[in-house]
Image (cartoon, rainbow, N blue to C red; front, side):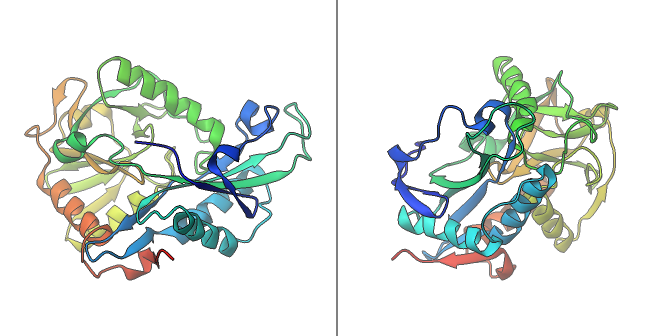
Length: 309
């Protein structure tokens, strides 16, 4: 994987990748007070390209900024179009987009109120976030020793830069212990989400996931899979559940823009179900990838098509 591209969009203009720089005194670099999104563009089986649920991602970006009290100096429609242009400018028929809202370098300190709000959009080629093997056969996960932040400690519905320190320390702990991902509990001990993915658990044919009002990020891929699962005839329950329910689950799978649909084969050294991706995960993943990569015509409103010039 290379993070390189030819062009970066910064505050309305394209600049070469190696010139897309910010001052070392940039406020967000020091304090994490900013917001971002992760968005995928896919090339479909017929050679066409589309950005998946772009408008919903940019709407969440603006909501995250609003939660922080930041006013983005562009309209949502302008950021939508800029995302399309970034992919076209870099000649990416598929790729990953990262819009970032950050504060400038006019002042330092926690109480700096008048720093300029900037927006940058970068793109790169990113494969399976948890690895091709994990995507196909499942990953090993562990319950983190770090909790997902309480709903009144951080604004958990915002995709806010600094809040991801919580995820980074949990992820690093899991990787150093030999696992691919960490599952985070909330401060009451209920299963919340992973470091960058929402989590689904299947028991006796019913799919369970933590409720939107809990300490989870309202994942756009999560919303996608709920709709797909229900269209396939599955019952989806949003409720609180515990780690020992995970130990006895028939299936567990994760989802996110980066992770897409990734099965979990083991939690805390305990095999999940048969140790292989289960029926629900397989069916939902098959439908998801048929929609985003294949020739499935359903959900056309999720796709913003574009062509390279």
